[in-house]
Length: 204
Image 1 (spheres, rainbow, N blue to C red):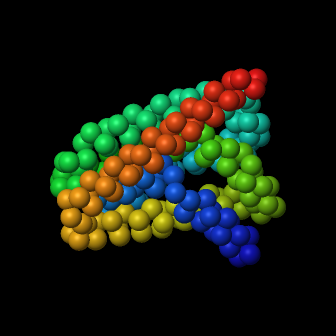
Image 2 (cartoon, rainbow, N blue to C red):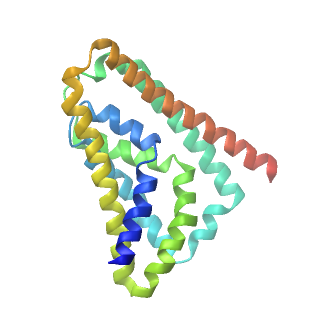
């Protein structure tokens, strides 16, 4: 139980940090209150295989300069594309009928895959958690993965639920500001990731 508690505490510090996944959860949350849970499913499609790979010893692959550079550049471009899409469609996003669950899952998958620091977190902090989980065998690894993901689901669902339940209080101006702000956050992370990729390339 102490191990599970430490996993939950460390996971929440990462999950609650504002980032691309949080920004996309806010935009999707205006359309459906369960968006956060669906985005967490897309997040898990990347995360669970990654946990297995790190457990098998592939963590060194994610800190190779060329890999970090490639993921940073590609991820940065994806986030900037998402930012432009949200900014251009923000007048219709707020009152748009809820989309299929697939859109939210894909959004979670895309923003997760586009973040190089997600992979670095698992290759560093996550690796330390996995090292402790090994003491409990395969049950410990499964407990780690499930606990961490439940933290993702809980937080992202809370964010989307709050956005959905409060949107009737938003004026049109607030609506535009919120979506523009999310677009700026995504674009900011995109530029930062591209800058990091270039820095990795120059340092190599």
